[in-house]
Length: 296
Image (cartoon, rainbow, N blue to C red; front, side, top):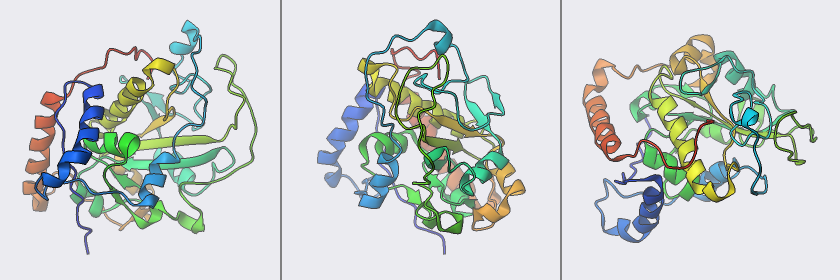
């Protein structure tokens, strides 16, 4: 049986800062809104799912050399190199990882260096319900990204494997040996070298996944503008080839074992509805914040 789609309130805004304020206001106003638009209160497990992904680095002003800002090998706060092998850096400055790398991540083969991770599926609910990567969370709008990572005011669809990974290990909470390996040219951190990372994807990882991945980084920059380059979520990746490629390579790591294309003829009405809402929201959304974002 398909899971019932969680409906999330969409907010109009003129800047990321306004969106943050809009979510705070919604907590007081949403009860008077129609049930179709009303956000749900997250349970403690769902809140923990996103809060545990936050960086533990102490925010502080740091002098960043120009060579670090332009070095795409460094993560968003310039503290170290990306822990996953990157296939390429595309024109949007997104770090792409292969389906095989994500499969290895899920199977625990990076547990010695990765503490927590999460896969964000940016496809529409009917695509997600037709088959998705085990443990993936379905977030397909900008307001869902905002609420999940910075407010926790809605509960996205979370598959059972988000609590348990293959072999019984927790997807959030794969532990490894601790150390303090520093990367030359990066910011001196001195904390645990275990990573917390997020992998975005959509059907082909060509539009929806990259857009929401960039949006999370934009909001993170705005929230931490006073402590640049500190970020709550400094290590982001994009799954190369999207769900289509992952399913062709690793169907055993998908649940259910299926693949529903975005343009499937049985879901034309839903596609039109989601596409219309997305276009309306994008017309209201700012292109960029004023905060410097020369490095993704």
